[in-house]
Image (cartoon, rainbow, N blue to C red; front, top):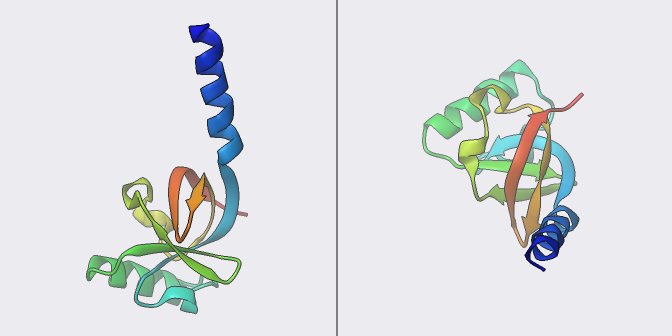
Length: 100
């Protein structure tokens, strides 16, 4: 019984998760940095170091990130693919990688 319960929980977690592609930006600039250019990367890095929060921009929406510690500074301002759970206006990242 316990084994099937754990297996059911694992399946439910996978079913609720999703893969999304977008850009890591900051709460000050939002959608302004969706090109991955050196200028955008520098601005996002500077704004986050200055106290702005990291955000995920996807499908024209700016979404908060509940666990920003999952994001490497090397991904700031870049196009990424996130696997995680989107709930309301926040995403919880399970994994993140640079997108093609």
